[in-house]
Amino acid sequence: MIPSPFPLCRFTLPVALLCAACATLGHLAFTEPDLTLQEIDITGIGLSGGTVDLVFDVYNPNDYRIRSTRLEVGIDLEDRHFGDALLERPLDLSRTNHSRVVVPVRFEWAGLGAGAKALLTHKAVGFGVTGHLFLDTPLGDKTVTLKGKGNVPLRKLIR
Image (cartoon, rainbow, N blue to C red):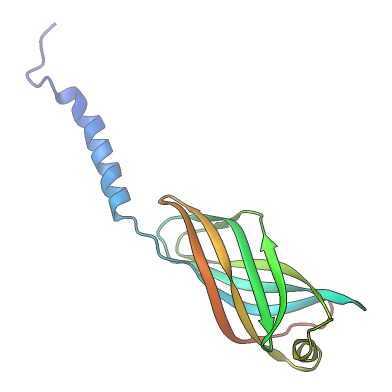
């Protein structure tokens, strides 16, 4: 057996791979996804209340896939609290791409006032959204705070 003139050569490849992996992770940065409420779909109306689907566009600006583990959101319509939603099913957000996310919300007529009137009489309604999006990323768990206001079109009254 001939001894190697470079006894440390056997470690060169694993060390190089480790350095490359560390360099790649070092260049990864986390940018919060953009979440925009696109529409509110009324899916059911009854005597005590109803259900709506909040339709969000979520854009992942990162160069890697992230996964949401939970979405908690509260919505106000016409400056009155309308309802709260919890989405616990995982969502895969592909890298540098838009995803459509539908969040069902149950509401009661009591105390809605202007929000209920807007649902029935307007083509668009003023909204406020607050909440948290919990993410699992290659850089660890991240929490994104959601906050937004605007006007959103109402879709078909009942599907």
